[in-house]
Length: 462
Image 1: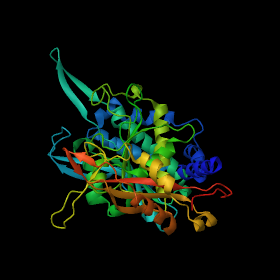
Image 2: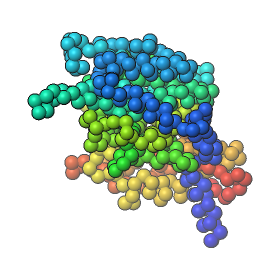
Image 3: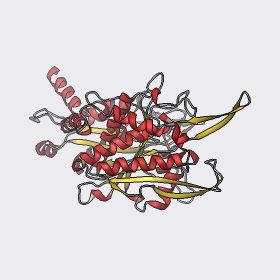
């Protein structure tokens, strides 16, 4: 009896292992790849970029200003020297906006985006894109009267967002040096006029770039330079995205890696939001708002360049992982409102309700531990063939707690996928979710792991 229990426990541990050996091997080499040719680190280069962009001579690089144009040319020159494919001229791909937010005498704002590309090596996947973005503009200057004298305040914007731009320049250089490691193509987008309604990213998505449907993910770097107090490294995904959350969690387990706080909501309006609205998976990298935000005190000396280097490496690693996946990363879960036209009853996500649906007083992890793993069976044919992997499923928890509509969103093979669907579909009732005092339908997701030992000799449940 004890022997059988021990074997069962071993099997459950094997099934529940989250990180495959191949991922661990690859992750250990990522930092070395990122630092290729930079044995002394990137801190000095990051600081050099920030100090140029935050210099008083650029007058806060307001959208449409000469300072913004100088930054565009600086970025172009840096990327051209590194050998990237430039998709815009040296002055940037320009666009116009009615109005005068830059504070000049003109009645039309003239801003610009700088775009560059590293082409993937895969003959088919190179036609899909991971976009990594950062906005180049800030607030410009403000004139105030002090003791009867006019004083010009310069909003240097070292953290917002010279920090993100500096990181993106260095990430672009490292991707170019390691282009043979990326199956999909990477677009580096330096957006203008973010501070005036995200005009640069809107122009890119709606006027400039014709293959928006080929964008598999957008990573946005906005304010990544602070590290004291509550300004830890955070990754915002906008929606609950189990697959993307799993990838970020895996990357954070690498030796010497930062461990970001992963948040499934949005944080502040920035260029990623327009990608999100088009159904493109997003990740906002930031260290967050601080007391110097949008003030003249946002200066280069206040930034943590060592942490900026580590955040840059994390963004590089995420971009590489997503670029090399066989299939696109999941879009994540969003509430679907009821439709009277089709008769659909709609559903919410676990993050949109007052009380989440629960399984035996626990969450989805409890569901895996108490129901899925104890009852899952590893098919004999899959054991013999040495097949393993992770199956992602989404399902609805009805108002009465029943589990319905189980769908595999990313699978391994027909047998393993079918086994997961069978076990999840047979779930006992959950305690339903509650919104405004009423039971509601929610959609959620879990990832079920199949992993064999080296000799595959464990007596798995049949």
